[in-house]
Image (cartoon, rainbow, N blue to C red; front, side, top):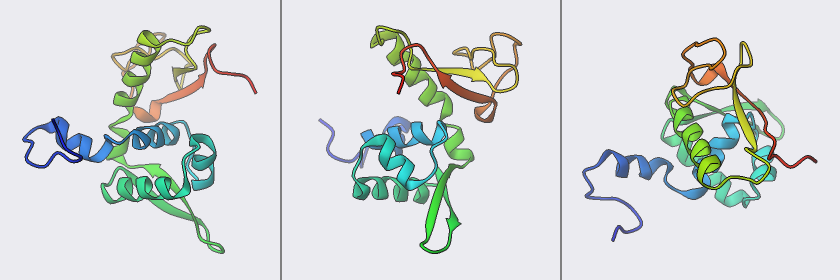
Length: 152
């Protein structure tokens, strides 16, 4: 059985899990992909303690997955944005979402839909736009509420 870290594992997956394998980390990345960039937005959305979120954000910044930029001086406040390394995780997060929609679906349907930012067409698993056929990158994709997202 694996311990709390993956030391001694000669495996790309184990090295990746050292960076993104903790439960809150993937949820933080999901929220940043969805456009939540400020610490308080993330706390409110995730329901995580400030301490846990601080640790996760620091880890992701240290690993070069997120970058931290000041948006206010007094008091100091920061926003967190994906780096190129972080944007490369967008297809992974999308596939986890689609997997969950398939095997653990909400009765009303998917909570979130991925769409091509330019034309609004649905994004396929090949990361292409179903409507116009464009191959897409992370910045080409937007999310919109799906039928399973609770309305507030």
